[in-house]
Image 1 (cartoon, rainbow, N blue to C red):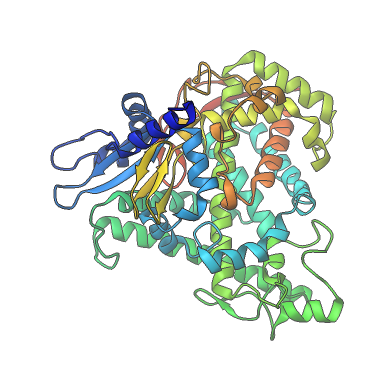
Image 2: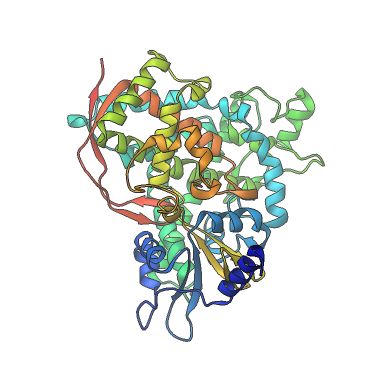
Length: 504
């Protein structure tokens, strides 16, 4: 038998074996582990059972099975080479879609293709680079806030969440939406925990049943929709006062108008020749561009889709960036030598001025710091799919209709691809070392045809903010560790305090 034939025979034999996994508790299997401590559960499962693990959750007779894939090779197959067979219609995305609408993150098939065609031009490098001014403005606001911090102590998790939300809101709506900050901070984690629990539940009770969890989830959803509608309505009123429209002249959700008159967006294009895609970067806020976006056949986002996109952008545009920034600063606060190198680069490149989009390429060490923080603490620490047909992933048969979990939290610590995986080392991301690694050994933005559309924006915002803040302050960690949780994104469950020293 040839070596190739022997390898094929071995792979076929492995594929016929039952996928191993923990038994869990007699009555509920791994349900509590998956919902209450998923990060540790996944790490232990890879160590004990390998790169593809089967979990069973729920009581006997109602037990649901989940297949976790931890290797870079498996992640590539699910997200890349076999992406058509793994869809975003598993239980988690079903729940997320119900809570936050059918936006770009949650939509499927024709809806997704249509939304992507309309939205993609708004996230070109040229367009995104135009958002750097808003990042700089919010960095100034944050620096002033930090100079007034009592005792020079701030909680990075709270501060970065506030900063990222203000930044994405300014880019979305062209305005300060401070009033929405507390609502978003309060509501997104509630919805995240609600989605996670229902996603793993062997039986999902109707949302209309007045259980405590359903009530909390419904109230959080109402608050988010209401604040989004208010912001869009205020944006429309500002546009009306200034004589410019922002949308389709129809109601969004609970009645917030996104335009004035009939087909305002189309009228702007027809009367002035304005095209949202071709306009100079920074000349219009993202809500206006979304409302004006047109496909080749004149297709556009309807009012409900517009609100759904805004909700998704608020979620994806602030929670993920906030997590990455908070941990990048926290790690630097705990590692003096890396902090010295990062600060020296920020001083040399920025030289006392505000950062701009052109500085991104000139800040390679800060970029490496950010990437290493995203390796150790990926905001999207787990993601799900559902298999359409039976397939072989990393040598194991995944049955048709299976719930599949990918866990960057584990893959980013895989000992077969990362030496001393728990150590903070930004130089892992030197160009020559990145080239040596598997493409999916690091995938905080997902991959394949549904990779994150906002990847460049997140990197731009985060690196420029790191540079601006390190130029203004030195940081020393007060809390040496933090307690983590998991909802839609990675959650910080304990203080992440640092002491700030303004730099002369």
